[in-house]
Image 1 (cartoon, rainbow, N blue to C red):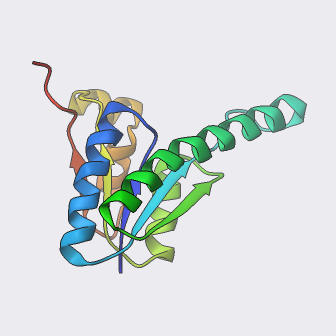
Image 2: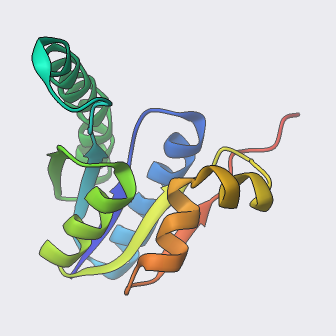
Length: 140
């Protein structure tokens, strides 16, 4: 089994990383760091350039998370997937036999998430494994 984390360097993802490291350590399981890197658009040279830029951004973002996992002594795997974040997380969870999917939230209201289709909202409705949504830290 594994712990799957959606990570994108946002404040919510940073807090979710800390929680994911705690969960992975508690269960003695590896951490799978996932970045859904689907570029908008459908075809053409602009799409290819944008896609490569998004993939590179994902690889850069996950490098920070790998360092944190290494410091915590948690084995990790990186998945930069050419898919939307929710679909990437679901695919990684299935592939890595996830115990849980962990994602950070942006602090949006539940109605906004439902209307705009936030990743946590989608996962809560589509995931066959438990989803842990980590709220952003409150402002002081």
